[in-house]
Length: 105
Image (cartoon, rainbow, N blue to C red; front, side, top):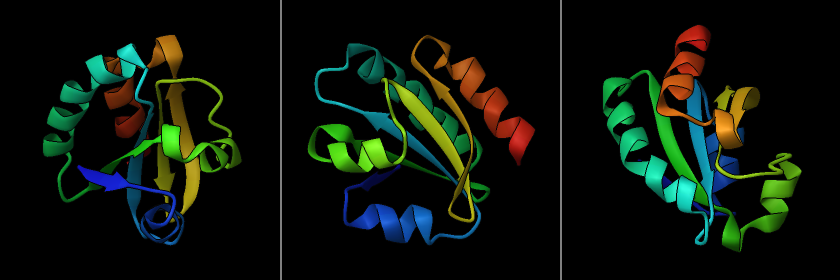
């Protein structure tokens, strides 16, 4: 998984081509950390079709707000730099994340 920061987000996500799934998390988000290993496994299944990335919002609050990330965990799917789908908070289960990817790619 690609680790993003406020400097690489624009290049990798907003100016990127194809599908990018961004896992927004923070240092203090226990559900985010619990979900991470399953998301990393999912990234292997879609390797070559979807780029999986994560962004720690603790150091990138303005960026998170600009992407309308209002709660964590949030996983957003982008296509060619445009957000096309998202799962957040209680809906952010590995099953819902995979379903989101499947219905969009």
